[in-house]
Image 1 (cartoon, rainbow, N blue to C red):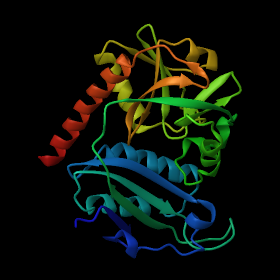
Image 2 (tube, helix red, strand yellow):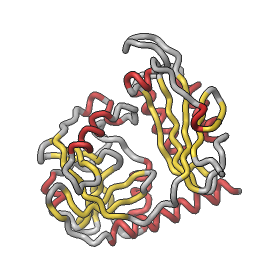
Image 3 (cartoon, rainbow, N blue to C red):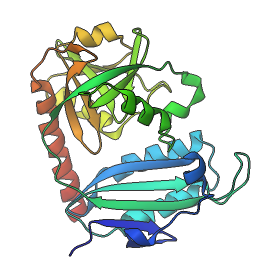
Length: 282
């Protein structure tokens, strides 16, 4: 049987079950990591350059030492990964072993590769609304780090029937979901919250900026409120793994739109994916 899970540690790929983390690794103790998750198709780590750029930014925001070495190890993990047709690659950089938040440690690089199904056309999602104000100056929300305890708790507490949560500051500002960036469409304009330190700017979000103009849309980065989501023509969520999701409900309210905008962007995005794979194959 062909393995469907692999792991990377100590500069080599191996069977997933052969890699173990020490109980005092800060990834285990505190979720003290920076990481990137990306799709793999036909053996190609899609848009790794964009993910690497964001990983470098996360390392800087989180104050990691040895950043150049870690990025080099991440490159080696991606370059040497086993070939799979469709998969999810997660590259995780831990601050290392040792108890105590101030303790100096030696950072380490890990990775995992899971075989999954091919990326599907946009599905509908229902978003629960969570009141969680954010401070832009902290920098934490702009970094992709491993502490997802709060997001997991919000998902666990969401009422039955919801697929994800949208983080908001009361009704005055909407930020993002637990796993993606939010867009709203209104009269051929796509709006998404600004990358001002309160959201994680996704790589698929950046691709929407490229695709929108070709499809006759204008993209603006601006803060918007819950009322703007409820009054939009259509809303969707972007992420590297799922791609695009059409938001059918925001809280208890059903949104307008049949998903046509979401589907159009998804199909254009799949064209970019094919181009990326072809470039890698040359």
